[in-house]
Length: 580
Image 1 (spheres, helix red, strand yellow):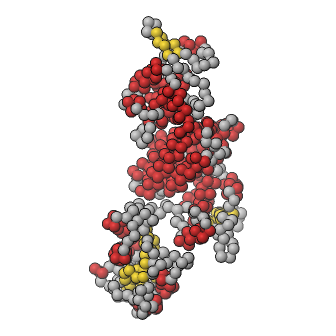
Image 2 (cartoon, rainbow, N blue to C red):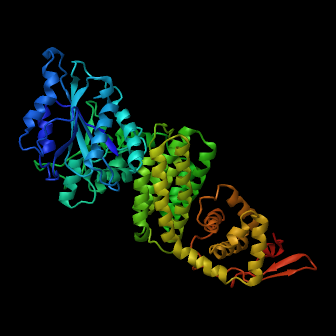
């Protein structure tokens, strides 16, 4: 249930004409009164003898009865109360009770306290009502409406529980502005799935992702096809901007521009500039960007770098302060936007949904300290500059790796918000994590399938050895992992890591200990990606030569001899290395 207090007005009759009229787009059906201050107000909707003028005069009578010098300039109070699309349809009697509870909560009318303001509740659709009230009480005094918005929100939460409606979370003033009904109807007429405001918000978010300055930001907006207007001071300094869709026109045929701050609180130019005001990137980040730009497999390299940056960011939630964590959460939104923008077709929809959902989780009243998020912002930049991924081979496998790491970061963000009472942000992060889960399943199917087949082809002695190693390294998780379908993929990864010269037991212990695994659908899958990232193994193993398939152990000498991969001779140093 969403109550919205609209701007106060001067003409009661004008609002009544709208409420009882057909609507701007013929969307009003059967307008009628469901409640009023005295249970006896005339209803122009269903009483042929009643008129709008009569209702207006009765509502405004307390205003007319006081000295003109004491009359408020804007005396018309307007509240709309709307249910969600998944809520059941309430009866007129239920909406009547909602209206009375809302005006009492706001301070408009409370029968227990005697004389109140005059008001009427009009229903012209199944899912909402409008309440119009006069801001002068019948005794001539004006009501105390301080904090009326918070009071009606609290009443909405209570009504949701009592009426069995969808339970919404209390807002904190950091959410993006909702599209107006006029914007929604305009989008419907134009055949758009989303309003212009929503399309522009997404386009600006993507333009911000990984950008380093004003020039690059505005170049990206122009490349996205947006119309741009910049606001400058007399000195020439840039102060702000507006954007518009070329085909979103007003009645005069002119583009409809939206300032960045009207799209979302963190999309004003000053707030955007905070993201790149922390100074130049550090040398490792610059080197990584150069490798992504010039090296082979640019999308895959960008995704691998993203996985590493996200993994380090996850650890911040355990050891960093709130301001640092808030910066990482905001930067995680940029990474999601960049990944969705460059994703392959089979993961695009879910990644886009994850980025859209997480947008709400990226803002709170905890002010982010920029600079600590540099690695994540660089990862977003790498993704954009790396270009679109093909969705197969190393591209597809590193996408799965990056999504897997992002899932844990977004889940950590949900827990962080929940611990601080940020209900809307926690819910948004949880929704984003569910979309990431679906995107991961689509991205990981092929590369994990290839690893599974490699694991199935390992010799029985090799699998037995991997099983013993797993039980020694992860005694508390081993039995669960051995029953998972992903065990064979993990066994193949352990074999590759050992062939590459790593200590597999130590590596397993390390990647399992650095973050909780309770939220994972498959522990073995998570360990596969963590090991392949930590050991710098190719994410896509389908084109690699087979790993060792036999292992013989000499019990007399206490040494182990491993056969090498086909076509690869071991060096003397390798041959002398003892088994671990």
